[in-house]
Length: 362
Image (cartoon, rainbow, N blue to C red; front, side, top):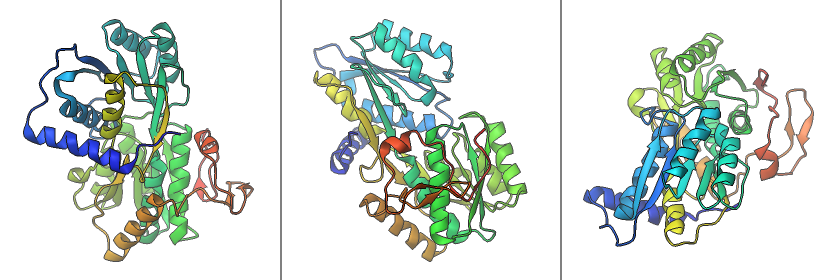
């Protein structure tokens, strides 16, 4: 899998930040600007997943100025209707199109076949073509860090996970969170509620409340709105934000949040398209590349913060690979032998919940 180097990623983001701060963009070149389309699952105001993708789009605009023209379409469901959105963007001359949700995958494959001269990029998917690339972030790394914090702070030893849909990414997250907890408290448990949606503030809040009622004293989420965090805060329960720093929604109760940094990737890929060097790749970045960061650690003892910082450093230096055997499933059977590191291929199809995670995927 392709990786963006941390130094290159930081340089790209620094350049876009400088352009934003200057309040201007580069003058348009004589050549026609590259038209770039973005398709979003939720609203740009979800303050989570879609919001953070749009931050990345804006960073690319700041970086390239008049060399590119971007268009985004929000609230596009993972259904046949999304195919029409991709086709419309391609028909209107967008030469590079990013689809930012897993459920777009098969529809993007179809559209890519119909428009072989358009460059497509699918976020979190695994199907590629000569003109269809894939990209993702190792979110599970951040969830492991959250689990370490939860294991250190939880008085009941039971945390709650507001889950979206039972795809491998979500299973990775639940397993990694529990493994992080058990690195501190070997008897820790994780309960989850699957809401079968990525973005539904009502269901998200209700799920958080149900988990609190079941005795969970730490709440995390794999959904896109601040609702679980806000619900936890309203009950005096510490919680984690998702995709972006959500501290403003729970200033006294958010412990940290996974922050998805898409800007460097978008800048790099758009740059390749501008230079005529774009090619289909599969990128899965994480802490090491800077595509994943943790929001500042807050509302926790200094000892817990120090442990969290140490954990991030170990993951970034590849000293902690997280999914290292022996790993045991819910039935007590070892599915990753002692000393073995789960491969990216196995992680990409993961549908096994580790011992200590309560509940079934369906």
